[in-house]
Length: 213
Image (cartoon, rainbow, N blue to C red):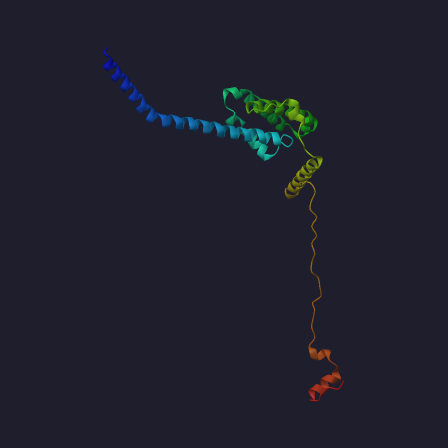
């Protein structure tokens, strides 16, 4: 093949690649940027879940912590995060079994169920933290947190107050004493001013004289 033809073919190929790059380059760059943004936002949501559970692991009945737990299946859905989902399923199953027990059973099993919940929560947070770049062991997660006794007492008192108020409003438990008072007073009569004056003074006034003191 003559050199002129080869040069012409090469020129056409270069121009074609250049045109494709001009049109396709921004689209590919936009897709890459969009993918990076999605991955960044997904990591932010995962970090929120992890930090919320970690910061409330001593008070896991907090509504925000419950919300974070219920979002695990949505956000940790990659194949590499299967250990997180499996650990959450075990913890959720334990919570459901615990909640279905009768009050009598709970009095007996509460301590054991709480210890098991702590173990399962640690089993959940270890792989979750590892997937986000944190290296926490089970002992650290179970014991390395600050929860003052005063706060625990305050929460128990608030719970007792709510429960007592609900029992009172529903008519259960202690009754609120109510006293009924009836108004039984004698009517007050006001005598005319003339009857309150000295009779001698009244007679002087009637005769048109100025009363003497």
